[in-house]
Amino acid sequence: EKLARLRKSLGTLPPRPAKPKTMVTARIDGEGFQIQNLVYESRPGLVVTANLYVPVPPKDKMPGIAIVHSHHNPKWEGELQDMGMTWARAGCYVLVPDALGHGERRQHPFAAATDFDKEFPVSRQDYNFRYDTSLQLYLVGESLIGWLVHDLMTGVDVLLAQPGIDRQR
Image 1 (cartoon, rainbow, N blue to C red):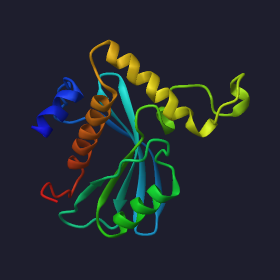
Image 2 (tube, rainbow, N blue to C red; image 1 turned 90 degrees about the vertical axis):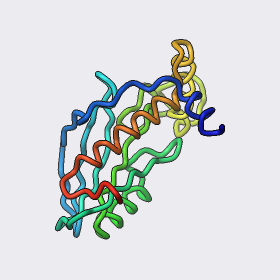
Image 3 (cartoon, rainbow, N blue to C red; image 1 turned 180 degrees about the vertical axis):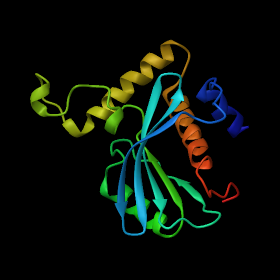
Image 4 (spheres, rainbow, N blue to C red; image 1 turned 60 degrees about the vertical axis):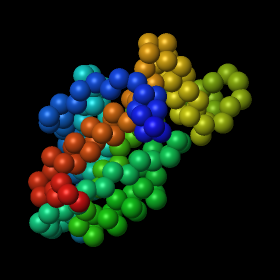
């Protein structure tokens, strides 16, 4: 019953493509891993930015992990990078996407206190603007959590498309 209510609260999710459109924009080599900066399309015209941590050298049948950042810390935060590197060195693919309205997917122009004519905490602006996005989605019968879930489901599809991934792990 609870799962049915949760699914209903997400709204109608669009179909996901069999193979999401994905592009690697940069590669950063590390000791025992590589970071691939990538983008993938979760909805037509909606791009998700992410870091994919890849084990080097690759192993057979590697598991995949998706790490979701908190409500105000995008993928470039130190603890997320540490987890990506650690798990990649242990032989896992690790995907760390930016949530809608955060990091490289920021949707507002306020990056510094001087960008706004009133006082506000700059560190909370992504959170505040996510609230506005949520209200706009409700007006058209959708939900922000549904969009976030769909982005993550498509991210799992991106993980499953990686060479050597073990779909059971």
